[in-house]
Image (cartoon, rainbow, N blue to C red; front, side):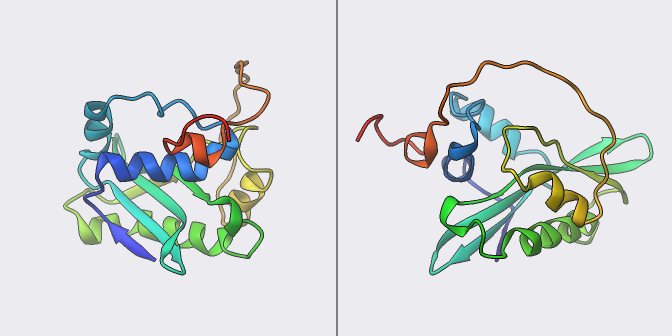
Length: 166
């Protein structure tokens, strides 16, 4: 697993599409480069990229946010590429990401971490919530939001810039 603190917008978008394409992660695919740059320039932002056989198998995107009681760290994105799912990698990757979130002040000049959190939804992988809970994260609230999505997720190919179709 590699830790990266200066991820390019192109690579961040690639990871987002590669992991999220099968799960309807489409919101950021149309972001212009400057918006990715702003997202990635938040002080203390870190990516943990899991590699298998030299290629990305999953990643965790951590982003610290100021809180009234110290620093909160959002796990902005977490997931595995399709062919890594079901191989016992998700739990260890998430554990590593949570530990990295709590230890951000060891690597950055940040106030102590008081909260690590993640959003999830019914469009995430079917094991996402159970994985979060098995790693000690607890549900703090729920919201109901109706969102129109395509009948089929775009998939990694299209989400990483491949042309539509076969």
